[in-house]
Image (cartoon, rainbow, N blue to C red):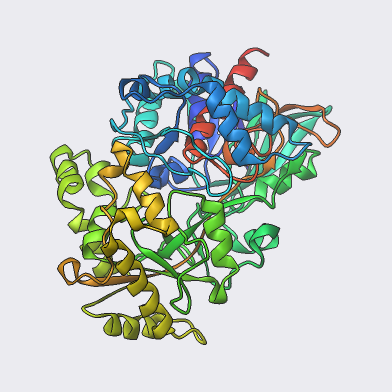
Length: 538
């Protein structure tokens, strides 16, 4: 026996994109039925665990701090970084729409839900070989992605038309229902008891995520060619249900699914101390004053790897290196100043909105975070000499990749010696970048002033074993600016919409080859709201 449901609109997926669509549909007095595969405590999807940074263009916060931004500048940066293919027409259209509408469609919408942002913007993805962000645009949510998700959920719970929203958890949608060429519903099976169900409505919104978490074999199958071969050890930093199931279902129903070979992964992943899924990982924000070494302990080069530059380049270099994993070598002083975790779980002072504690961490270092990671993570080692550090690194090295001590010691000594000669004599790209980072006030607070590695006053020494961490698929279902799904012939499939990562964050690949960062959560809101608006316009 199967259950049957009926509603005006059916949303598949309870992440940020689905929640944004649901809210705006309630504003239209629509009856909404939302199916989510997960359990109630995880409602909100990956956004709940995210750090919560969002890219906005020309906000009041930027202007207040003298940052001169504009949609025209952001559009230039986006095109440079994305390197769109000729046939990426709709992705390009979505990207331009994002930079022109990020404030009214995303920033102001979130602010109206009670979301606030830290006063200083971050400045990631400045670019290595081509321009990235010309100015700081990454607005950090006060309270991390957890608070952002809770604010949106609260707005849904308190909505005057809340009774029009029906939510069913542990419901796995695995098929679409069509009638006369129009999608009119979905079908599936419950995760908890196996009971079948179907639902009918006037429109279906796919907000089910991408393919970079639930099934890492799919990630390997579609691994980006420019990254070489997929690493043997690949960590999972995505959602356990981001398995690409509904991308396949959509394609089977005529949808154009594209750019599945374009991914957004991170190079500084460590095994999660308390895993909730296979190969569960944490994504570290790599300290910019640490030396990035390959599996043998040799510094990457000739261009050193430095965080905040080009994430795709970092991933590519690690994937093409021996062992396909890496080390970062630093010390306690660097760690407490620069080390962070890209997520809500470990960034507790921000997540819990503890202002005094957060300010203390900015001024004196986040000792609690580093101490916790040193205690809980098997990928961190601590020592009081380079020789002892190399011994402990060897104990963690994967088979066949012992540390080349002579080279590692030489690289560290050479780097430290250059710092000792003074800034006027820096001839190292990492030091030049650090000098540039520190000219921006927001980075000066987070980056050490040319700190030597082997400095007894900054001991203990720390080495972090890091792996590639799978995060997001940049491709997906092709959509127009109303989030309507487009078929392989370029026509709209009536009744079917796709939002968030399921749509490649807009158009089947709004980011092209790489993201300016902070555009994932923003695109979820943007595409979800676009779908609701298109449905409202009939």
